[in-house]
Length: 298
Image (cartoon, rainbow, N blue to C red; front, side):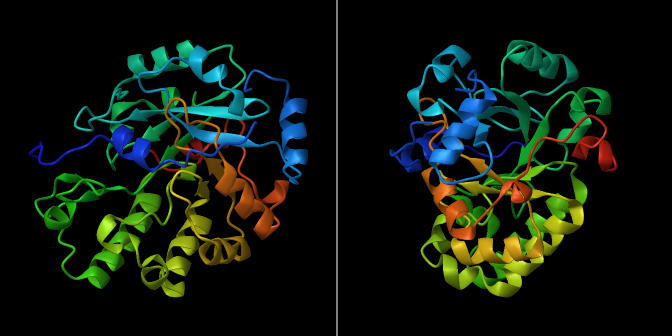
């Protein structure tokens, strides 16, 4: 169902306003040893990977020329799902996905997609999806009162999903995270614990221990890694401590559009604070063990 375009800004514009300007001098084309050197400099025992990078309207050559991606292994994700999802590019069938894979072939980087909504799997064959290194998704598109897709960062979202009772909305939002994990075969939950504007200033109030534990329990059950997002600086430390204690795997993500990919200050700071090691970190699974192969494909 197409929704009216009221006070709409793109996720790219939204992120461009919100991404921190500070970055690390961390190339996906560099040998892995260089990535480990960068990790050593950051006080970590694992190679640093930014697995949430969007090309959008930029080019791979421009991205790889950025100084902050030196020593960093990148994962390029393109939005994937039906054309109802409006982004600069949306992959919606096997041919389009194969074209994306071909474009990135031969590069020292990971190839993924950012899955959109609960029906993205219907766009691709399991065999084609298995060619990806990983699948990433988030919960920032939410069911509206009319059943349509609402981008929660847009100005009219509070009315379209009804946030008049913020506690009730928050419970629905947590349930939405769990539903996504229960129904979709994916590897990384991105932008975890991000809140829409009416709730954002009271993050610690709304992310109660009970709500965090409900989300974390689902992540462990379904084998989903949680992204530490440097663009939104979430999850915050108390959330991350609960997740680490439960045995959740983590990934780093800048959610970067040119020229902001590879800026992982917050992710690295949280990893240091938590004492994360290689055993805590998500790495793309070998063939046969990816989420799209482990989970039921519907």
